[in-house]
Image 1: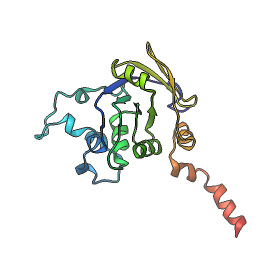
Image 2 (image 1 turned 90 degrees about the vertical axis):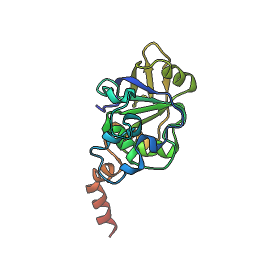
Image 3 (image 1 turned 90 degrees about the horizontal axis):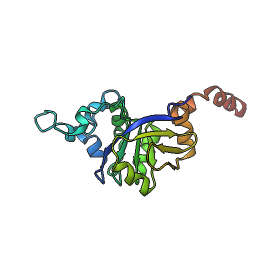
Image 4 (image 1 turned 135 degrees about the horizontal axis):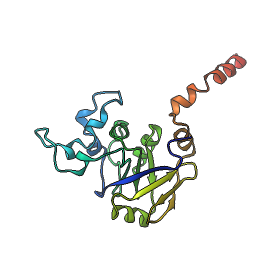
Length: 190
């Protein structure tokens, strides 16, 4: 069973609008092509001051074993395209992002890399923003979100991205799993 079938978590709310990829992971930390350890730089400039000391931001002490769903303000993930942004969020401990508007490139990068992007209807998004810590259940197979005490809703996701997330793979893993069939086809065509 996929981790996104009836996935349950509390929602952590960042109500700011226009959270861009440079806020998610500042450009100075984009010196690696490895995903490992990028969570340490997620929202770095919100979590640490210029001297590297922790700030009072709630992300500093967030327990992502309980809060694995990030509810962001409108226009989440805008800015430059960087796969490091979903990598950092995943490594930090988030598995899904919900907003009323998610930038197209971020949404694509997130889905391809294992972070579930969910665009919520405005009313449901507003309710989540005003109810931090709400218990949320996501059923990716059924493309639905259940909110304890709040509005439930359905969401759209590109079918191939949905398939890969349900299988716990990415596009490359999808192809590699079909290597024998691809080689057999190539042998028949030569």
